Length: 111
Image (cartoon, rainbow, N blue to C red; front, side, top):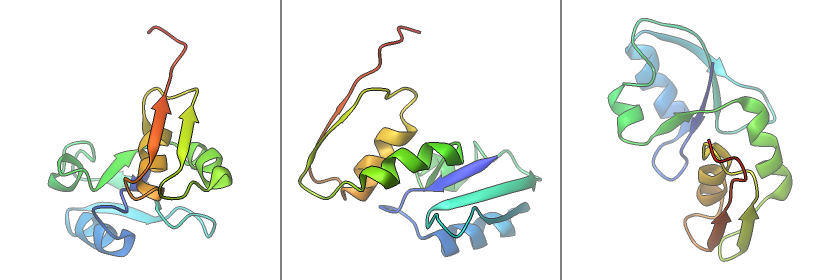
């Protein structure tokens, strides 16, 4: 399982320390990611920690980081996300843009 740190609310090192204290066995995802954490096992439900509920991280596949990193959006830009569901890439775009700019999030699938 992979977590993406919300850089608007937390730092990866601080979040990792907090989750380790809760019984989560994790490591940084890879050298190419500054916001990813890979979880090997956890004594607590990672989708229900106080940090998760406060928006410090979200569950997201590591491969979903790549399109956002390739785009490298900047604050103040306009971005169109044509495959927005369930929202991981869209929220990563917003974090990299420091919540400054405009994101048009679209999803063709009705489900």
